[in-house]
Image (cartoon, rainbow, N blue to C red; front, side, top):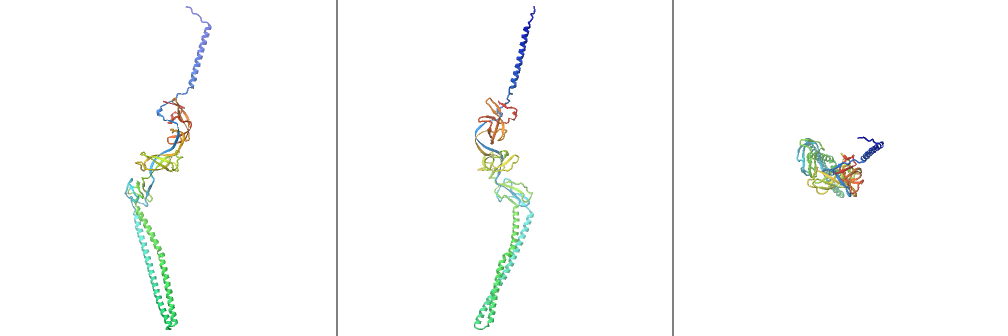
Length: 418
């Protein structure tokens, strides 16, 4: 068999064909590479059942803020010891129903008992001194009244003598000198009577002023004695109001000081709710706003009556007075939840409150599309309520958004709901 040699033209055509095929392969590789590079990464899948999806709505929105707290009595009375002493007996226990005269504690104070005895003796001594002074002044008055009576008798005798002498003088039986002596004697007796009567009047008028120092001393001693007696009576510590004994922080045998708190009584029929609300949500709360308090056994309406001027641990205290009958089981220190109505907004676009995002702020939410994917969307929030928040920009009525915490997908702009 004989080999046939290929011509140079055939070799050139074959070489050109190989070069063309190689160029086409390179172009295809480049095109595929460029296409793949332009493809977006696949969206991560999210189970729809694990996220909270809500629909944007338009309509009225009632703004509310919520807080937790406890029921406390409106009328609370702290009872303090009026004097120092020792607790001898706890007559009542916390929870007991009391009246103003109910004795809660019995105390003792030997020094106070001794002070009472001393004050009583001082009062009796002052009273005796007063009686002695009155007796002395009465004796002086009797002496002065006797002097007046004597002066009257002397005047009567002098008058009778003068009348007799005047008759005798008319009959020329006595001299003019004797008549003048009788006239002078009668005038003197009249002057003595006038002086005696004025002295009696002055003495009577001076009785009150002369016994005034002794009376003042008696009044002072009596006030001191009454004070000690009251302090002795206060050793029987009383409730002072109708209500329930809530707290008794002292034990038998303990010593207490004056003005120390020894008991607390409250009226359990009139309660209020003391709520603690986050300080970021209290800027629009005002006195008189309507509130609702959930006692777990029922909801009671009320009104805001007081707002703490300062915050504590990130919350502000808000007092709500309750209106109407209390639900069964409502009692002091019961844990409750309260909601305060701030205002009602008409015709606004709103959605449920997202896991993150405060009112008047800008956040991003995943907005759902018809193909089951959700794209990150910038949303401007407005005023908020407990469970809803106003949408200012970024969403329209009917949009669906994911409100759950999606921080684990921060590196993605879209997710796919499965």
